[in-house]
Amino acid sequence: DIDGVGHKYCLELELEDVLDKDRTVSCTAEVLYPLGSKTSAPDVQVTVQGELRSTEEADQEFYNRIRSLEKELVAENIPDSHGNVPPELEPIHLLASVASGYVIWQNSTENTKFHLAQVKHVKQVKRSDEDLQFDFVVLLHEMVSQEVLPWELTLLWHPQRGARVSRD
Amino acid sequence: DQVLHIVPETFQQVQHLRLLCNTLMLDLWKPLLPEDIRAGADLHTRVPAPLVQEVKDSLDEHMISYRVLIPDVQKLVDQSMPRDRSSHRQVSGDYVYTEYHPMEEIYQWMTQIQRNSELVTQHFLGKTFENRTMYYLQISQPSNKPKKIIWMDCGIHAREWISPAFCQWFVKEILQNYKTDPKISRFLQNLDLYVLPVLNIDGYIYSWEQDRLWRKNRSPYENGTCYGTDLNRNFNSSWGSIGVSFNCSSDVFCGYGPESEPETRAVAEFIKSKKSDILCYLTIHSYGQFILTPYGSTTQPPSNNEELMQVAKEAAAALTGKYGTSYRVGSTALILYSNSGSSRDWAHTIGIPFCYTFELRDTGTHGFVLPANQIQPTCEETM
Image 1 (spheres, one colour):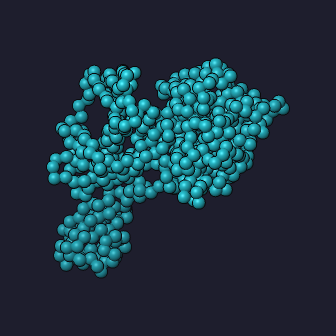
Image 2 (cartoon, chains in turn purple, red):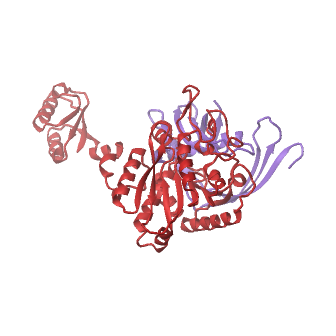
Image 3 (spheres, helix red, strand yellow):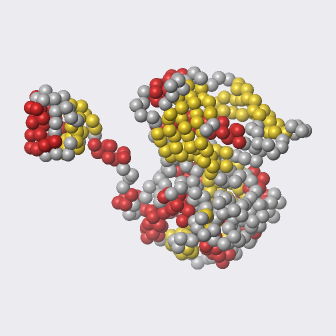
């Protein structure tokens, strides 16, 4: 409890690589939820102890594949009702998770628990610069209210520059 | 069968292709008729497997270049069509427990299971809002001594597909192994199992046909502008007090009064009628990986909390022992969130000693849309 400021949580976490379950990395984090009713995102400081696996090759391959598509990528319902994701859409699903993570962070309080439930829709938008752009509609499930909230967001991604969310 | 892409260049080639199509009766996909074959225009034709080599040889002979557009037509057909649901599902021995099934198939499965087993009988429980019949299965070994009952219901929330999948798996496991597994046969000597595979049938169907993430039932409110009560907020246990909404558009709308919903009443009336014999009430949900004990509406522990917790902890340990999946154990109010009107709380308040809510896999990675390939491990560990 930090008087006049908010509630601070000190965490020790283990990150598990979604694509390589045996691979874990420890990290520590401090999360500060601000007091008051104004909705501002919690402040998060993270230190990763150890190295994250290099994904340069896969990133470049994905980047090249999308750049060389004749028609912009469009897809719906990832995963489908039975939980399946076609292999070529896996990276899109992962990017959606990342983008959702940002939105979840920006909208979290001590009384919310969000997860990405499903990607309702994704549309690639071709750009004149080097970034890939994906416009998503994601469905976020909030545990306490049990609501499923649709959220529109735009993600820019580049193999070296990484992911950035720009709001609609 | 293959589909070839050909672009004839000369009139001779066009003529030859027309001849080929007509004499071999090839299935022209583009253009529609041999007469419409033109030099410079795309030609797509399906060639039956036994003729493929002959056709290719003939094209080579006439210096007509071609490309294989589809190397295996059957494979493409199989991939793009939903599995033929009707023919395989006759006998429960062929029933695929590692897939999610629509309600139609679950109804058929119940009929089959009852037909094939001397232990199982199907019973009418009630009707849903949309007038569908709710059935439970009674698994009972004939005996002259009275037996206590374990009740388990699945699918109170439409989108939690792994839950009905588990109920079906559970029934299958019991019936397949009761003669050979000493634990199960001892169980059945002393206990009857009552299983309701899908409680919220209307909602479940809606999640297959319209909205995969639907949760509630399908009662209309406000002149049909708003649908659904959260059945797990609709029971008569501190109804409407906490963790609910009185707004129909909310996913935790508790209805206009306790037991306002036909599905709730069907379950409640039955359980009330048998309550002195029911030892254990189980209700299966997803997701989160919890074994939850009463209560949700208050952090006051139930009278038999120690025993409830001890059994739950042992269950969680056994579950983890299978595949390492970790489950948390505790009262809903303490480890999850506050809610009122839950079926589990209600069951305990009317005197059923052991009441648990199971929240099955996973913890959020897939959430409600758990891939079918996790049905087996989830069910095995939960057994």
